[in-house]
Image (cartoon, rainbow over all chains, first blue to last red):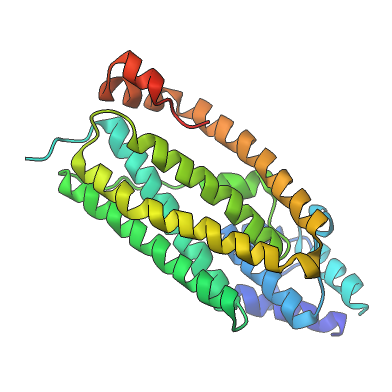
Length: 76
Length: 200
């Protein structure tokens, strides 16, 4: 999946307008409950055919961090 | 006439209720995201159980003459804060396994406190068998994931969450020590309380 498609995909999962997903936006600030992030992370892995671990997520705080991680894992 | 709940009892039962609601919301979201198969089926049942447990606590508190407190933070929130977001389904299930063991231990020990209202004991009786099944199905699912994730990775994840559990439980106990002490001392003599100490 091209990098440009990752952010719209995240916006769709979070049910947020893409304008809210600035690179420096903190992921946990974008959702009412962290459960929503868990669901999104699981679904993104299924959709993109990748496997993430806790080590991968340790450094992920912002939308930009997540997009970079997904791009790296998918080779986008 | 049912006995009234003390402020501390009401808080603890409301905490259980809120945790069950959050469990239902968590597993409901995950069940929706699961591919068809045994994990999807069992997770949907798990979601259903947690919802029903929340109802049991709500009805129990009502029967005892009051309404549940609105509480914001739950035990699950504290877990996620301490452990970070689980990164894959195996980690979700490992966290669930650890959490469910804590819940069943908490409920079993609370149910042994002397002088509990029959309505409260009845709810523990209804819930504890479901909690045993939760541990069973998650354990089987984790076993089935060994070829995909590796036994070592799964064991290490369970160990990591067990450490998180100890830290979170210790912090919760410390934060609410007054309520715990009051509950124990109201329900029975000191000797009885010592025999049924709060879970650790």
